[in-house]
Length: 116
Image 1 (cartoon, rainbow, N blue to C red):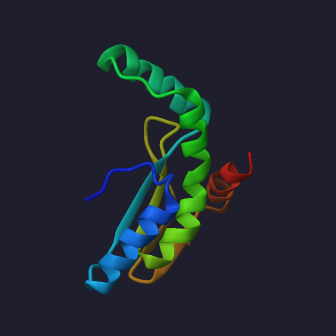
Image 2: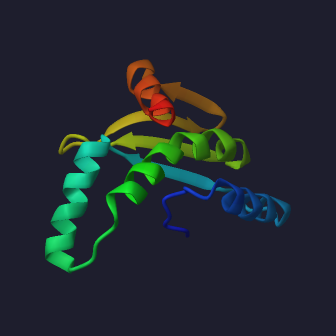
Image 3: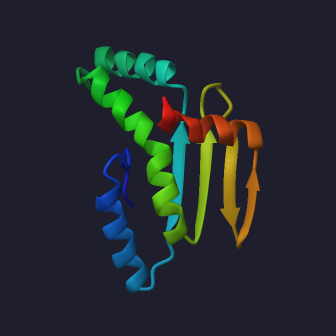
């Protein structure tokens, strides 16, 4: 299991390709939220856990998530994207058993982050 921001697309493409060659099934779970909410949550963790992440790094990482998804999802047996803006997460899109279900509005909003 990898827990990562996926900002380094090339790194994960290499990892995913190697795992596929070893006949692994890859599941990708993306947990996403609005950038301003992400920054607010990070500031809260900074106070609680005494660790910080510079805002410019947060913004760049956030912007790269859809780019990474575009590049990596083709290597995955299954994937799911959640939006956590609200207390109850909403499923943006899911691929399971070769079936894909997408919430068009949430998916469009998610993918457009890379254009900001």
